[in-house]
Image 1: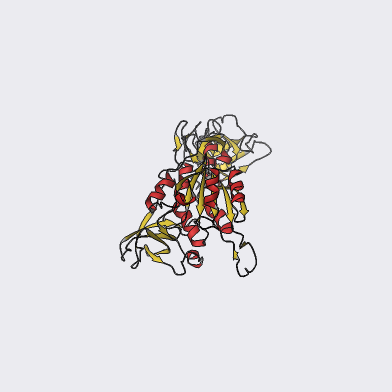
Image 2 (image 1 turned 90 degrees about the vertical axis):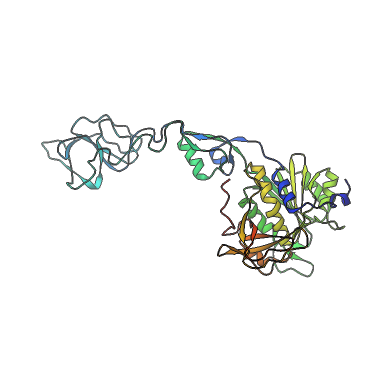
Length: 413
């Protein structure tokens, strides 16, 4: 396919999003609990045992048997650690116990430390007495029953959930050592542009790097894992080498996506024999964004203008990463009413940074393709159709990756 053919057929906004959302899904893998965090659960988590698997004390104090009077013979043996197992209590007996210890057979309730008093004399064994007003003598008081949280075999978490630290911890409590998940896709970030500097005041012809600073956090917020980040001059061979050597599920590049002699991504993809899935998108900004596949690796090309690049990430990157993770649906958005008349393009869509105030969409200023100031104040990207959106009409909104608050609740997947 020639370079000219590769840029000749822009996809509609909706077509581009659907294509990204159907590009690929990573196969599930079995991972240890710690490494499963961030993956998408593909099998249910069930309790492998009762939780808790035995009745335990909810307080430090004494396990007490049933008596007519609020006093007991205190055994010399006591549970000083949660893993201590006590002999059964005889009628009229009590034994010291700590929080989390299994309660011995014959326990009526647990008397809290602050509600009891040990009395001993030289002639008699130690006696435990309770304060008269304590509620601790009610049957089962301060005892965590076995299976109070879950019974063995009970479903705890369903497939399709992202494994959070809390879900991994729940799996551990339930007796699991591994989980089967679709892992977070691994991303190589390729930053092009010889004019880009990473510190200091730019001279004429130079610009400060914004993609290398913001994209790693945005990629993480979208549910992917940054494997590495590389920089390249505007040189086709250099970009070819960085794409060819990547050990990643997804490559995200910045800059060089248009069709001029200075733009290197499309010639690099042609040299590598990549399949172009989305050649460009009928949207402004971000029109030259592209999506390609080479073997099992996907390549997302973001335009070099800052706002255009971040817009393309929201439009194509989010459904692409959700698809790779196995999230359903892959293409998601929300709608909010326009807070004022929003000007639209003659064709395609115009995507503008906006704030969500009083449940309505309000565009921000300083939001041209090369600008960053407007995006810094935005909660969302508003997708304005051809012809515009009069005040009060529903407008599609996309999250700005990493923005707070988002346009919609963070996806639970």
